Image (cartoon, rainbow, N blue to C red; front, side, top):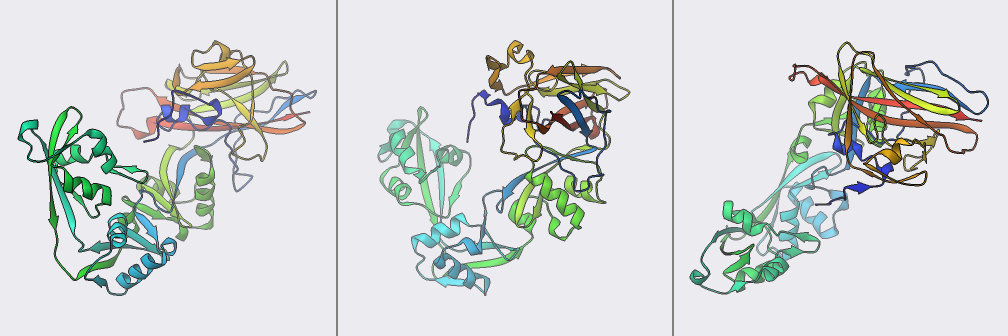
Length: 431
């Protein structure tokens, strides 16, 4: 597991994880395919001398599509990416089955680690009759072990293969039998030389039973739905309309949440009903975070040469507004219009950074921001705002984009629409 420290770079959009997906990455972008597919949420306020607000947008619908590549859970191999010998074996399996009286070690390893293959957009499950190894274990008194007892370090070396460590093997084997289709050399030697291992303060004895149907051994392939290979419902968006494909593509490329107004028929239902979206050979996780006009509006104006951003509750009931620290917008950065998502952007300064317990500053720079979400409760028509100093930037147009979480208060906990994400985009010009 990759672990991350509590504090990390502010521009990484830490608050998104802290709110279960309600917060997008500050500094992301929205570009609707149709320029008319925009809804301004406030009139532009301007300072003709230096700074002016050009546009403020919020979006009726917000989705989050995280790109997973061509293998969403680590079990699908593309036939085109296999080695020559692997591809030859799979071709035989697809053509009726591959047989051998003595499967080499590489083949046992390949079959064990390749449950599914993909060829030209079609998915197949690989099944084999190669020997399997059934491992069971139990904690016993040290004096009852008939054989040598391995140290924990010896055990850990045995269960380590390349960059993969199966350190929980004995723990799982105590609860239920573990079946292995491939036993690598260090683990095979461990099974042959020891009868038990010292494991977290206990002596755990183990046994290994080999299930062997005997030759000829066979590898076969059968076509399966993509949902079986992916481990969840998959919507194949390649067959959708051009408008749908464009939104899926843009959402998949966006950092964090993606907002838009006009939803082609069936798009949001399809996203909600499927765990994954498949487009152009790439899988995306599928989340609909907001559907319909948002309860929170975002406005922007220039006051005394400073940029003021405000969030207002436009609904009829109180709303809990979630954001990164400090409230209500977290650490805010801007990027040049049309800039790359990889650009961390330029910091818009507010003294609230230095005053926050969750932000580390050095002078007028933010060094780190904590992975935490802060919540403000807004009554109907109530507004919360912050004012920012824009740094010395070259003349041009700049964009501030981000997300806020909005949860309607009340007792209707079964209403999924109580929680929503507000995606906003503010464009301002300098010079």
